[in-house]
Length: 161
Image (cartoon, rainbow, N blue to C red):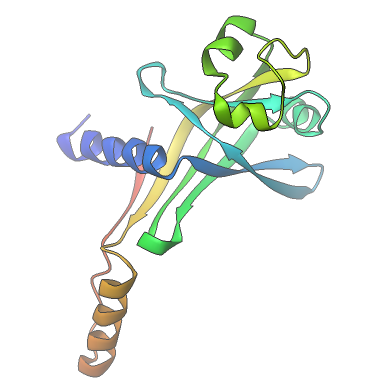
């Protein structure tokens, strides 16, 4: 792997960590479904985890079609990541207890709730957009419109994960 590839992977992981929440997109037959989820990043494992509820349909959707998309967005700072990966549902109670934290208490009383499942995403590839921010971007767009040039709005790269 080249230094540029490693740097781009680092940036993807950093952006996902800073943003923290993703829209998880699954396939329900021919239709796409998205829902917000709180991400637990484990870069050393090359894994993104989510706690999910077995009573909802995403488990069934993932069993039928494990290819998913995660979309992370910080619109205020113009930073985005779109990641494709392979999902799997697990009932790993040790890992569920490890990840159970204050945000999870909004959905379950304890890590021992039998409805909690672990959603594991193994990343395949990602694309990121990393802009200097809204105000700077607007200024650059205005300057480009006046001068007839294309604005430099930051980095955009596709990355093999």
